[in-house]
Amino acid sequence: MADRAAIEELVRFQGERVRDLKQQKASADQIEEEVAKLLKLKAQLGPDESKQKFVLKTPKETLTGKYGEDSKLIYDLKDQGGELLSLRYDLTVPFARYLAMNKLTNIKRYHIAKDFDIAGQFDPMIPDAECLKIMCEILSSLQIGDFLIKVNDRRILDGMFAVCGVPDSKFRTICSSVDKLDKVSWEEVKSEMVGEKGLAPEVADRIGDYVQQHGGVSLVEQLLQDPKLSQNKQALEGLGDLKLLFEYLTLFGIDGKISFDLSLARGLDYYTGVIYEAVLLQTPAQAGEEALGVGSVAAGGRYDGLVGIFDPKGRKVPCVGLSIGVERIFSIVEQRLEASEEKVRTTETQVLVASAQKKLLEERLKLVSELWDAGIKAELLYKKNPKLLNQLQYCEEAGIPLVAIIGEQELKDGVIKLRSVASREEVDIRREDLVEEIRRRTSKLLCIC
Image (cartoon, rainbow, N blue to C red; front, side):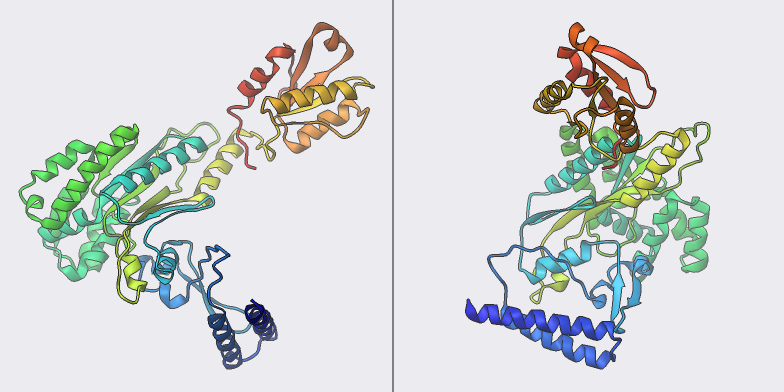
């Protein structure tokens, strides 16, 4: 233990040394030398079994070559010391590298507010169905509008390209073109395939016959009988798994939210099986609203080969996951709030317990305690005799939607005056009915807390 403590102290000292050099904008060679010393010390330290950490640090070279044409979404920069760094919004590749480095073969990961992954060898389509169920639950709970989750399979796409006559060397680049069909017309996609990527026009036409189809399990069954696709091993495997997936989705009660869409391609190179993407269903714009053009709000898929790239022995760990488009969802919420002029709650407090006259602190404390015991998020001002106007103003500033007002007359009548902060309407509620009324009124309010 003493030796470990001494090495930990040296690691801290060397870490500060590296940071100081970067701040001083020392030469790249000098920084590299000190970083090498730091890594050597950390290697001596070894893992601390008492600490369970989940840290994803990924060198630039690890990110390159994993995203296909989406590699343009990797951003290069240098820190103060000139060290080359990169930013990438996606954590799938770093997660796969983490599994390989730590020899993990079974794990379920939730990254707060953004990602969910399941890694491990399981029976087909059960983890995939759970990911789609989770995606449905998240998007439904956010109440951002009706949505549809498109699903496809990379094996079906590759099989389709093969039977249509696409050269193997062009699979990924043609896949990237197909993925644009949710944004541009088939004519524009075909023009890119033929004019920019050198695909024969008749091959592009064959692709068009497939990728403009979408539906449910009936389309899967139809394609299983397709004279060309049914002869392709990859396509047949993908269609078989999709049929099984739809069975599980029906059991989960979400098959109505899922569409098998042959135009869905997901341009990232690491996907190997089922892929999916959630889009909002456009509704006619209301007065003051602009058409929402935010693209997908969630996406994911299966990436069974990614961990093996980083494992020294090439051991594969099957993985499937999803990512939520937090920034896009916020842009939708913000636009709709601006159009409706609705104020966003920035606090979880449902009600403020207030008094209309002096010397009612004891009654306020009794009532707030009753509300807390019932699971209501309530608060009160920490003053013996606050002015009613100050209490109401506090609610407006804090975004608290309701005020439960106690007065001498209300105490005599056995009621509580419940005030809506937004409309300023007041109604007397029997004390025994107050909890249910607060729950009813606040159940549909949007809170960004």
